[in-house]
Image 1 (cartoon, rainbow, N blue to C red):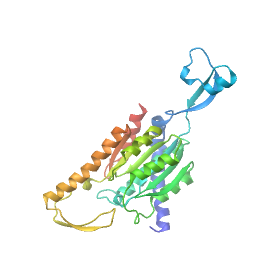
Image 2: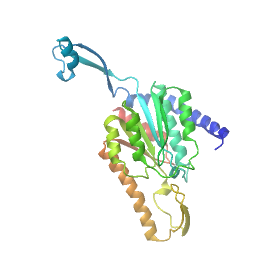
Image 3: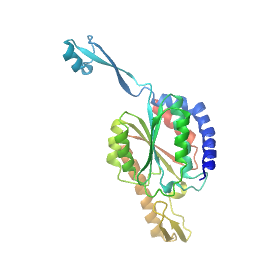
Length: 289
């Protein structure tokens, strides 16, 4: 995509998603996530009835008098977007490609966050981590993230969420709200997801297209593996071939569900022909209660 085309697309996404964030999502986002974390504020003299678990033993030992730690709700949060840039996202049969929907959803979440004075960062990955954008505030920063999401994916072969989650755990030490946005056609990331969810508030957004769920019976198909670029002729008239594809697809979806359930992390499933506004609103309202 040419630079002028990218800038034009960024502007289109900004106009659409910033409006959604301002008028719809900012309040829901705040209700869903604000005040969920507690940060250390100060120490004060121990008073009768204080929880002994909050005693600051270092200060108590130094002064000879009992002191307790005082905590307050975190008002400034960090939103991290862990986004799949692999070529499998360059697919869509109804309203838009998966990668276009991914970019819009990330933009909505990012604008919602900065309107609540939160920082936003991003980890963009495919077979490796492609780009790390440290958390910052401001519209200019969000537009940079959108530009990176629109960048060329032709060299992005394969998907390795395990590496991306490992990278997240290394660079993001402070607790963050983390949205992992992908089609999740990958595996072997359960342990890393569990580890990440111990520190962060992890949410998986699975983006998929209705045509991915089953291989149509249309005879011989010249199919290119979006991840590897390998071209094969597939006989879709063969029930065995269709069943093999269906089993492969369902295995990945089941693995996605199992990983997030076992990690006690939330998920959102969004199809390319669905209204993502309603689905995100439903999720935010559920989290607020």
